[in-house]
Length: 165
View 1 (cartoon, rainbow, N blue to C red):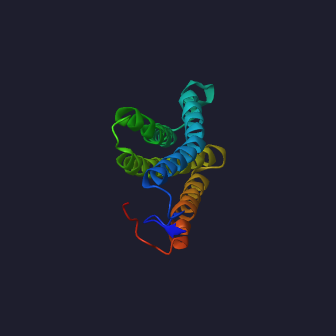
View 2: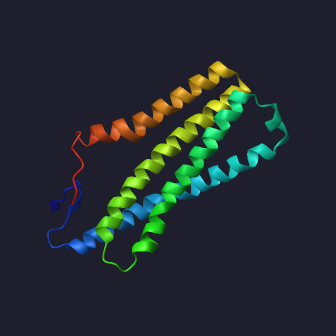
View 3: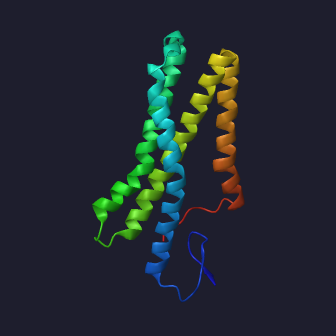
């Protein structure tokens, strides 16, 4: 067994094209999990203004809602982008570039999703409990995302720099 630049274990006799295909398939599996959730979240957020209670929100709550729905839309766009990349680059022998671009927009999409969920969490707490609880809930949510989605993985990797293949 050998280890590639990403720390991925592979057999010495595994051809590079198979390893690249495996990386693409792993990314697709991850995207399948997150894409459905983001699309459902965005869809639900799009319906909120059509509910009777929406008119009771104050200006700050409406602003937070608009930030949340914008971030949900941005997250959906970024997390669906690898599909568009694949269509645009299909049969052009650019799979390594496709994986690099898709990896970058996926990371940005996850960041937008974390911000969206933190904003929506804050909005819900603000409406149900009050402004201070909303701010606290949003901050705690953001701290959890930063810890679980960024700090923990980087610590586990020993802060090894990301390398290109």
